[in-house]
Length: 311
Image 1 (cartoon, helix red, strand yellow):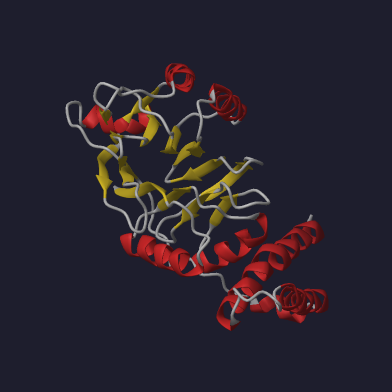
Image 2: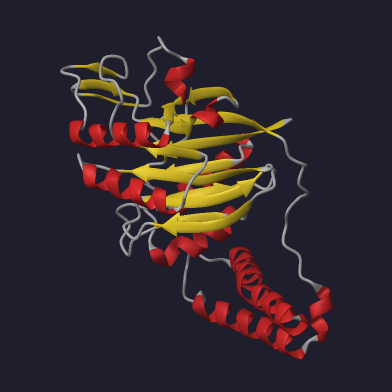
């Protein structure tokens, strides 16, 4: 028996290079398994740079501008396989069909909505149904509270009522539960707040399938780094075999293939040209970008070619 830890955090923009690298470093020090980030404010142009800076598997949903953007970052301390992915074109959610631990988490999902927009939650629900999910984890900044009587404190407690109605329907339809409230029925804890007027809310939380809820050993709300939101995390028990370091290595056997060697050389030259005028990319990061491109593009093509030649 072992566990994975999934965390969710509204990072309130990672556009600043120094802050982003410090936040990434802080997250890695927590040694969680999966990190859900909201309000990353990543652009399409910079998403690959951010993924290379993270160093492990990363999914980033972004717009051409840096107004929104969400991400799912994986650590290398547990085995997993991504079967299918969907990144919202507006940069507000990501859905992953994740197979791991001799179980299937059909949708690892990420939400960030800034207005009372029930259509957003309805769209998310429809997309999830298309994934034919069996076990679901939804985590993020929902920008609403599930119960104003206990999840909010301050003057005139309120929430986005239309969105809440749609979210409640999703809960009932998909058999999801608010795992924090299940394990802490009477405790008042908040993840975001402001002073003028004074309002404190539990806007960040996880909704999980009842089958997963039985395996949740711990759920917590913790202080975070460089943001006014708290970090939420859940520990889930699973059976799985420990994974090795997980670093990409060049398959030296392919170096005897002329086409493969040429493809690697072309990828190196193309990547160097692509980022030669980008001041954010230094020599160390450029090397990481080159390895990322080779592992994603050249190695993938080689595997397909090898399968085709042996079939």
